[in-house]
Amino acid sequence: MGLKLYNSLSKKTEEFTPIKKGKVGIYSCGPTVYWNQHIGHMYAYANWDVLVRFLRYSGFDVKWVMNITDVGHMTSDEDIGEDKMEKGAKREGVSVWDIAEKYIEQFKDSMKLLGISFPDVLCRATENIEEQIALNSLIEKNGYSYLTKKGLVFDTGKFADYAKFANLNLDEMKSRDDVEKYQDKKKAWDFFLWAINPKHAMLWESPWGEGYPGWHIECTAMSTKYLGKKFDIHTGGMEHIGVHHTNEIAQGFAVFGDMTANYWLHNSWLTSSGGTKMSKSLGNFVTAQELVEKGYDPLSMRYLILTSHYRKGLSFSWEALDSAQSGLFNLRSLLKSAKNQKSRNTLSDEKLKKVDEYRKRFVDSLNNDLNTPQALAVLWEVVKSSIPSVDKYELAMSFDEVLGLKLDQVGTTNKLSGKKQPTKNKDIEKLLKEREKLRESGDYKKADEIRDKLVILGYDIKDKPMK
Image 1: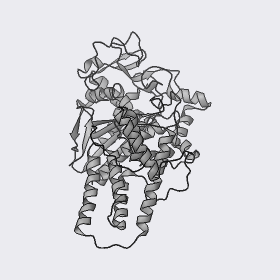
Image 2: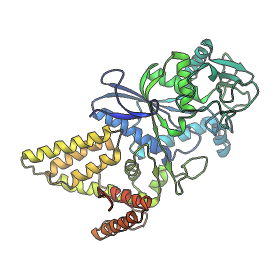
Image 3: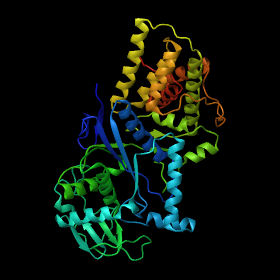
Image 4: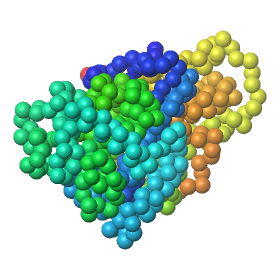
């Protein structure tokens, strides 16, 4: 089975076919560096890291590009509100440039702590202003924009398929809360390509006056600069579908007359307790650095992320992280024991077949729209299997090229948060009985929560039909 991915463009799971045989170009919407990047952001980047790792594991030559938004744009991620970079500078009493440098470093450190590979190109918006101006000029030349006192605006009325990607109902959209309303706009959802604001902290000269680029244009400019006007995969959060990626697609058609990316992938969210999205604006976030301060191995967070499908999202709790750390440390301990058993007997045909079967099932899991929970389950089966220890270790290390959990390390130095973890057989049996009662009573949500906890600890749960 070849790689299949859910494409937000077609709204279905499709067979992945690269533009150039053996090569893949990926662009990921990166961070806005006005404050700390938290584990909610890392949820997205860890999943896209698995995508990149798996493509390379499968033999593809991958070029991964990610932007850094260090040009100010609004706190709503749209055209209204307080400028993010200026807000950060005001909060800490430093310049917007200092804010950018500080939080770029924090972002890089967060990536490192969670074992996320660095993109091949990590490009800053402020270092690509000329490219954004050039793209805006082409949009203007092609008749897709108009000039107002406040800046150059994209004319969405000129792009007939503007609403298609996000299934927007423009007939009912008399206005929109996420874009600035003023009389010079033709439509409420027309968006800035270049903003003119002499009071802004970050300004550049342009054909339309001194100002700064709109948020959406930077991604179109930098993705096509580094990957060409047509590339394979564009990733981002599901919140990008309705506005940011809709606007990117419109810009691409205005310049190139076509879609810039063939596959648009979107991750769901990491939520905090109560199901609220973890975000900087709400202040309900946890950073990777805080995990270390609390005594966790930060790769436990990566393990926890991999227990949930990227399109499903994940509810974060300290209890869940405790379970993830227990599961990760158990894995490492078991694999250390397997490594130390250096003797290798000749593999029987049956055992050789089993090794090949595990490898195929692991690959098939990830080929199925990056099903990382299933891939983890296969890894646990390998660790608990009867195949020779050396082969068990080597197979697990091969899987870890994709999972990125550093399974060759021994996780015993970091403490848990103090809550006892169910590791003994009687504890597992107690959870299974509790889950069965919940299923019988019809409380499937709580039953699923227990199942997820057991999966984290390395148990593959297969339910029998209810009577």
